Amino acid sequence: QVQLVESGGGLVQAGGSLRLSCAVSGATFESANIGWFRQAPGKEREFVAAILYRSTYYRDSVEGRFTISRDNAKNTVFLQMNSLKPEDTAVYYCTISSEASKRSRDYDYWGQGTQVTVSS
Image (cartoon, rainbow, N blue to C red):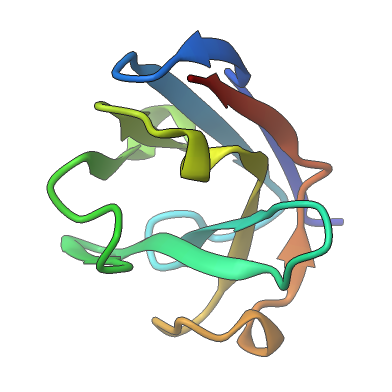
């Protein structure tokens, strides 16, 4: 019954910004860990960021450029992506677990994904 719906992806030039949203339903949102992963063609799905209560986690390559946040009143998690690079091009997925983790196997449910394409 848990549903996650990503939105906000698109085509942007290098150096530009995008704001991704993940709307969550069917879960106890405030206590949940929400993660963002991404997957480029031919590559493994990789951790991007996660938020559990007020704690946030980022992969090294996006730290300082991306910011994850949550709006508990709207059951929505955001990923603000600034200074985008072509290497950020991927399908971005939001996912949910009960504990903080950087491993995709530790997450229980996944959204359908939203495409982010950064041109050079």
